[in-house]
Amino acid sequence: MTDTPYIFLAGASRGVGQQIALQLTKQNRPVKALLRTETARADLEAMGIQVAIGDALHIAEIEEAMLSEEPIAAVISTIGGLPWNGERADYLGNKNLIDAAVKAGANKFILVSSIGAGDSVAALSPQVLETLGAVLAEKEKAEEHLIASGLTYTIVRPGGLKSEPATGNGVLTEDFRVAGSINRADVADLVCQCLDSERANNKVLSAIDRNMMYGQAQLAEFRLH
Image (cartoon, rainbow, N blue to C red; front, side):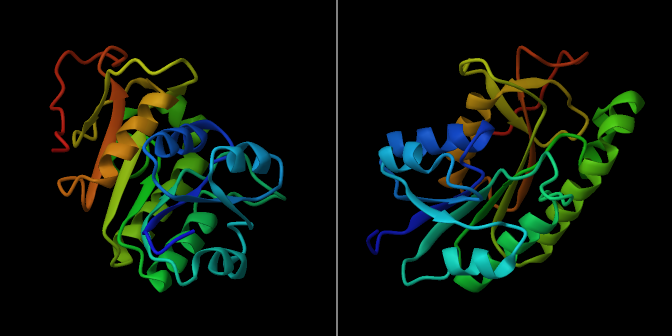
């Protein structure tokens, strides 16, 4: 690692985080990935990514990984999902990452959340909310903590996630009523574009594929540049 500002990426072992790691390395950006276990370490190091082992649920481990002499260009978090040892990382893990990023003087924090968090609850059906309500409430708390942190932030809320190849049709919108699906690789592309977009600073944006919208013909697309 050099004095070049690097991207601190939490959640790189799978899903959207893994796709972000792939895209950042293709762009030759220096990346440090936080992993909870050693499982994905060899694959990430083979891509030229520096790896730090730490559990986002433990603030001391996050600070050890993040607080160093090297400047952080941005922190990206995609963590969440299934509980680990009975605890979800959606709020507490992200809170710890946000607090450490403030201490580290990170320039920007990009949080990958979900449609259904915050005001975008209006986009989901009662049946979906009944299933996902608990985790969406955690994601909403993480969003609120980030907004209140003083960091420059971008919150990206993807719709239903698919594991197909990128379509190139992923779009962002400030319309919190929009619902739809999007491929993980397209979410990763939009997140990487947000890194260099001043227009995305301090914005909360929903992310869907323009060809996978649910019941809506029109979309007010948010332009990053």
